[in-house]
Image (cartoon, rainbow, N blue to C red):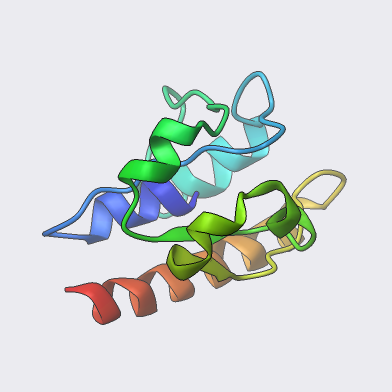
Length: 114
């Protein structure tokens, strides 16, 4: 969601999403709630985070609490932690609230960097 919102809203930068334990595919409810706001994420593929991605990044946003430990300390100056709830096991209403929270944070991030 964060990558899709960022790339949809930003005029000057590009986001690449990756995780330490990525799912095999985008969850159907994620696809549904993003379509509700006019963004199709059905073709996105979850990626495993790599040192190459970390090196290239200007900013690294950690979305889940506790994953900070998985990022090497040398990237600390680039890090920001948002502590977004996991979607797994959530109702569609809860996922919409998380989606809206992510969108709000992405808008704030874009204002900071553009």
